[in-house]
Structures are given as structure tokens and as C-alpha cells.
Image (tube, rainbow, N blue to C red; front, side, top):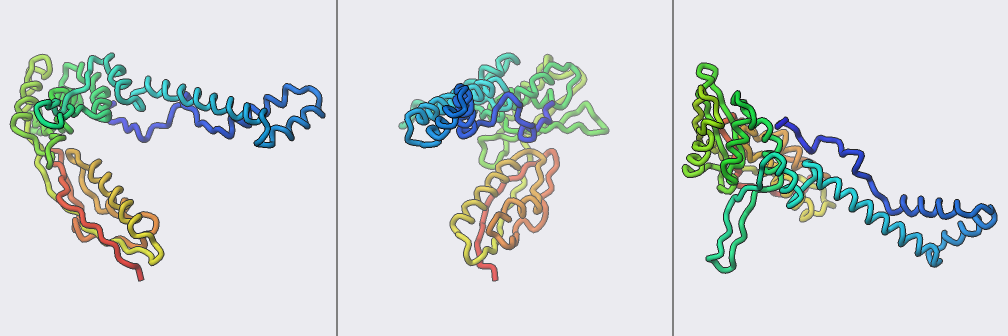
Length: 305
């Protein structure tokens, strides 16, 4: 269950695709059906075709109110689905699995201006909600260790579990710290997670989990985008940077390799004729003890001839 990708799920039928024009057309059709006399119906059809008519304004107003009501219904439905729920709605939804949003960084009222607490993101809370059922297992599955490691501290951004074939009971647990610049976990956080996973109510008696900080592999991205003479360079550069930053963010996880094919894909946007990537020179292949850290991004635009 933990492997579910919410982005690939088809939206449920309960969530309607709404259109003001469609609702207004339905309102007008029903309104005209109330006239049994064909001549009166034809005359009224001409009337409501004119925007300036008061009856047209009333139909538009009622259609708009219906649109608002149905959109609110959509939002109410989403609030009850873990895929779409967010904020306090998600906080209340995950309670049924005895989960609460974790604090990543506590509030600091001793500084000016005061710093608000940094809380666990919706995506991370949603992920723990999915893992929670695996945490009930007494057999020590991988997803169970991930759940308890994530729940040990709000700073745990990602977890991997490695079980050597020769000694499968000696587990290596690697953690990534989400508020660390590079993702490397502090010894303090390693100790917190180690304590949580060593509890007799968490691990099977024969397992010996050892927690480590993930090993950070640095990489940089340098690329040249060749664009047409008519392209709006500032817009293209911003879009390319946004795409690349999103990819870098998504790959800041344990074991997620940096692929040249993916970099070409996110940089080859509309208006770009050719992409030349100089760094990294090849795929950055990562195993389950490693995570990538992007140290520098340098994107240049050149005219395509």
C-alpha cells in the first residue's frame, strides 16, 4: 500500500467537473420547458438570449450560485479523502489511525520577529497515514520500520531499510533529514530514531536494526538551452528553472538516481530547440544508502542557428 502514487489515481466520480456555461444552459433549458405554448416559448428564448434582459440576469445569478454550491460540495468531498485532504482537514482525517502531525522545528518566541513552528508537510503526513497499517505488523516488514522511523521525529524526511542476504536480521536503516541543507542526518536525530526502532513493541526480538545517516552524493547541473530567435528568453529560462528545481526536489530522496534522460525531459520545453547538458556527465546512480544533493544549477540560453 505504501507504494501508491496519488498522482496516477483517476479522480473519483464524486468530484464533478464544473462549468458555469453548462449550468447556465441547463437552467435556460429547464426555464423554457415551463412554457407549454410553443409561441411563448420561442418568444422567451429570444428574450433570454439577450444579456441585458432582467430574466437573463436572474438565470445567470442562479447558475452562479449553483456553481458555488457544487464547488463547495466538491471541496467537502475532497476533505474526506486522504488523496486530496489538506491542512486541518487532513489532521482530523488521520486521527483514525492514531496519527498526529509532527513538529519539524518548534516555535521560537525569544527572537524578533518570533518564528512560527515548522510542521510536517501534508505530503509527509499523508505518507505516514498510508504506512500506519503496516506498523501494526509483528513480523518486521520494511514498511513497518519506515513508519516508526518517520513517526519518531518530524525531521525524518525519508527512510530506507537494507537487509543483507547473509545476515537478514542485521538491518541497516538509513534516514534523510529534511531540514538539513544536504539531507545528511545529525547524530542527535540518528539516536532518536535508533531508540524508537529498538523498542520491543516495534521490532521483532530477532531483528537488530542499526540507524545511519544517509550517505550524500553531491552533483551539479549545468546546461545550455538553444532557443529560437523569436523566443521570450526570460520566460523560457524561468520555466526551465522551475521545472529543474521541481525535479531536484522530487529526487531528494534515498535511492533516487539522477538520470540524464529526466534532465533532458524537464529542460526541453516548448521554445527550446536543443538541450546540451555538460554536468552531470552521466547518470548519477544511487543505492538505498545514498541520496543526491544538488550543489549548483547553471542554465544558459543561446541562440539556435
